[in-house]
Image (cartoon, rainbow, N blue to C red; front, side, top):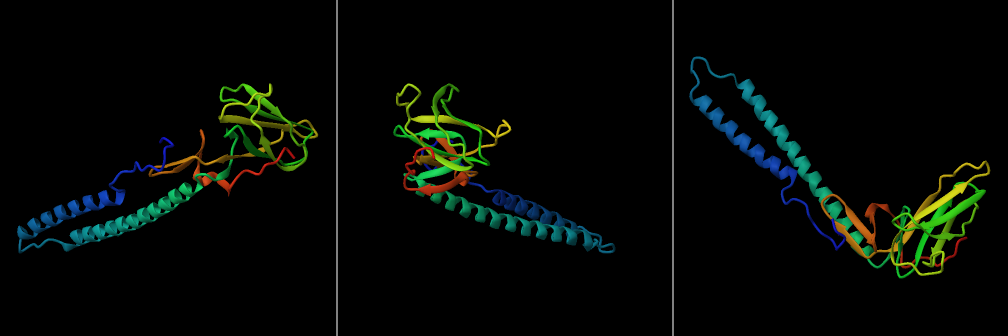
Length: 226
């Protein structure tokens, strides 16, 4: 699914529609067979009506289940439409999503990391998609959430190209044990794409699911590491 705008690749025939068609065909066949049996039954030994009555009841139950499935499909379709509309509204806005892939846009990037407790040491490293270290950034060791805006410059002071970069935050506690660090990234939404199963949003070349959006804002907050 390319990120080139809202797309629809779902099948035009829903599961309930196909099932309803098959049920109608089977029911017609059943009625034809039943009619033939009734015409050719022995008047002195008529057919037991219990069997075909049970079959009629089963057909009715299946029909009700198909109707329920159709209503559910309609509900899902409405939900997906609302999700797509919501995603389109994100274009041009800056969003926050959980993750470690940082989009550099217009030579800048922003992200946050959260420490569960005060750290004895911390390393905030930016890598390119090949895994090579691009920049080492200063980090705050106090417990809590810290927002960082990276100026997009590498260790030599050169401005990097726009695109996806990997964020690595490694912190140790007072006992020297590695801590679990949560992180989020910010990016301006440039495209959305959707099919019958999910809606994706793109911040440049960094792609995320619409349900992973945490916050939406007009622009990233311009802050240094704090």
